[in-house]
Image: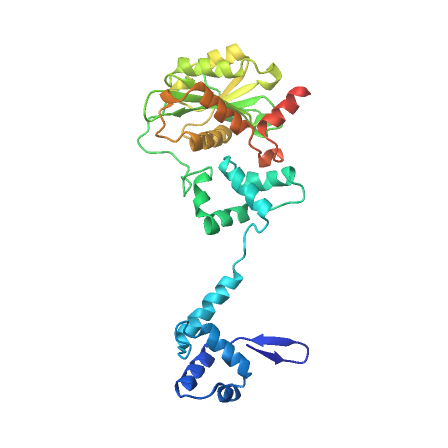
Length: 331
């Protein structure tokens, strides 16, 4: 390309498609490069460079305008692509944390805490994974490519539990997460056996506990929830929000033994207890739907519980739920 000078600056002018057509015709006619340059108003070195860069890589005497244009377009596209996560320390940290199960958003937030002075953002991490390192896709927390739409599934029978207090009557301080001690409960089922997991998660602190139960019955759920929360100080144990599954039928007994108030989501509105739903989604990363919970030991479950409670969270300023829980208990 040549320099084209105006009154204030020099502008580099790339070969156009029509110029490449003319160049190919004149080369085919046997014209010398010096004469071609003069006729096209270009410097001879520009003509020579164009032939070398975009001509045939095998036979340098051949120059095809369409092939030359394709090579030039490809080079231009590649020159505009950015190198993602150029800092090797950042790249190494991202790969390590992905394999530990953290999300790109958590990694970006935690990087500033673990390595002051280094930074990246979750979008760059996603681009790095999908564009440069597709082998790392398997380490993303959610396996689904598309989010499922919220709504009522047809054909389901509505279950009515006695003496429920609906979520509409839940106080504002619970909804707005302005105080500690408000929990959400749910279960995770196995396709391979009757065994299930009982899960509770605190709405503000985000700490989560998991227990295996022999089957998803009301009696097993009651005992599991009580076992998980009975040793929590009373000021951090004020309410539990359930869904309308039959396993929650003994909610009154749970409320009595733990001295808590219980609330219920609207039927088929499981997102109204989105904290525990999100937690279960992450549990599924470790225990997919085909997992037989009968074969999972309590040590494995405790290991998963510890890993999740030590994951940094954006909503906690990238501290982990366990770190925040310990701080709260110390006051």
